[in-house]
Length: 334
Ligand SMILES: [Zn+2]
Image (tube, rainbow, N blue to C red; front, side):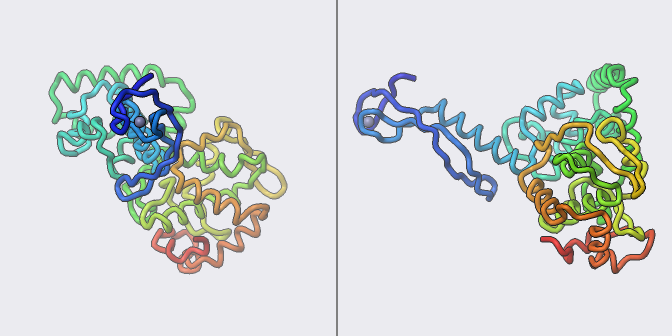
């Protein structure tokens, strides 16, 4: 890319490539992104280089998706490869229009609901559930290809203890999106990362404290997004405050893999065993995590518990009752 035609100079000149920050609007959202622009060395005006422009558009698209937690084209391609399924058959088993996924492969940005569904397919267990329900709609050839891909994956995953445990957890928390899980299906990866997020400073957090932190994260996410929680967990009213459904089982399943559990005179302390991978979160989700972390920084489990007792969501429910995300509107944090 030594010389490029400059309209102003009416000749081909050498160009200088500058890294610049630009804001473009994608789907109504302003996206700030570092791009590369070319300038004529002779007159200093901007010159157009198609390859550079394409690369900039790709960067914008990628930044938009990253910030909003939207699946990328590469991730969709990876899912098709993983299950040896075509874009059309996949659309069929998801109950979508035949060309929906083809459009996404060409770069159309999926809405959040479709994106979440596609992301959940990374888990073979989730994929299998969709496949089982609609497989008779596929051609025998397409069906066989998927079956052998799944067999291969199963052979690879069998005996993997983590896989076993996560399957059990997913089965336990499986629930249609509704007002009690904040309209998101249970997301094991995000839930684990939320827990690790609160342990990242090396602090140990008691189970009773972590229960509240999880609840505040989901409620605040729901409040800010106006209809979407984060982890897909359901919460119940417990005498010490809101707690995730079957939280004992939950932490027990993660023990020795992601976290450590140590009993002491005050309760069960949770420590981190795995590293945090914050890239599962969108920027908005990270903001929620930071807000909750800052609000409760240095608080004892008892103090958080007492604080949670003043929430409308807690006052309006009784022991053992599920806590609806309707109350998120009145959450003390915002
Ligand atoms: Zn020029």
